[in-house]
Image 1 (cartoon, rainbow, N blue to C red):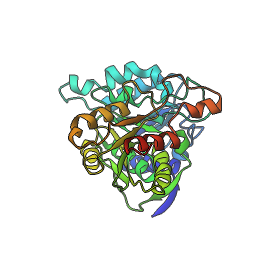
Image 2: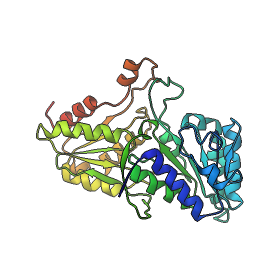
Image 3: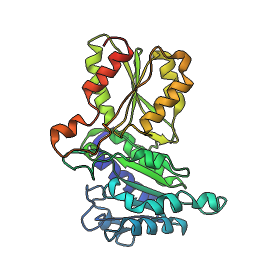
Image 4: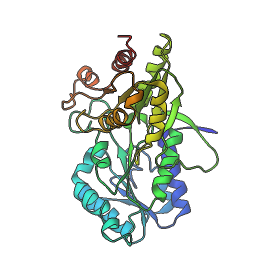
Amino acid sequence: MTIVNMREALRQALDEEMSRDNNMIIIGEEVAQYQGAYKITQGLLDKYGSRRVIDTPISEEGFTGVGVGAAMAGLRTVVEWMTINFSLQAMDQVYNNAAKLRYMSGGQIKIPAVFRGPNGPAEYLGSQHSQALQSIYAHCPGLKVMAPSTPADAKGMLKTAIRDDNPVIFLESELLYGVKGEIPDEEYLVPFKSADIKRAGSDVTLVSFSKPVYLLMEAAKILQKENIEPEIIDLRSLKPLDEETIYNSVRKTNRCVVVDEAWPFASIGSHVAWLVSRNCFDYLDAPVELVCSEDVPMPYNHSLELAAQPSVKKIIDSVKKVTYNA
């Protein structure tokens, strides 16, 4: 096992897959000469050249369309968005081309394209650059959506996404790029539809993905001192979703709190809460709780920015509510 940060884990996945498949290319803003806005593509231009690591103009709709077209033509494409917030400029290409063309062609056209970049709140980015947009992409049939929380998951999941013949939205977190963790020395893949139990427990099921998983782990340490043992599930794959791992946990703990950085209306978190309420109704000893961002644009003021997002305190309060310890 080797200890690396998530930035390096993602870079290794890209490097290994480019070495494995000469038809793989990377395109996006600053991926080549600048080595990536977050240095994920560092060293790849020197190794693979400008025909495979390609800088683009600041035009998300344009280069996303190029990525879709290249995938249709037989290349395996990774499109880097500097931030998922900028991907809104490319929604027509993603929704109406990437997600639809394999279906509309009766399977004759493959779209092996990964669209990746940082998603969700970071710090001091304001209301236009702190949005968690995962539910927009999970809403659309034809797209797969992944969101890792650890370096090991990030590497194995990105390799899986790259090898898939369907378009994949790969959501990272800016604040997790520096997080370190162990990754296996041998090659490995993390499949779609495979949630991970990050912590076993018996009293309440906590469900989340990406950065909030660390809030759950911190909350669990505090709750354990109060004799509450949470089970923590990291969804990893948002679509397709591993529902059975969630249900099996809730049938054991009889309580559930879902945490999502997005706004509450029609979010991944609200959908998971509905699934649990519908499919585990006879097992629940309390209504499912949802901890999410406030239904407001993200403030720039740091104190208000933190107040608008999920927190350890909000999670603990919700756990105590469903365990009747409030």
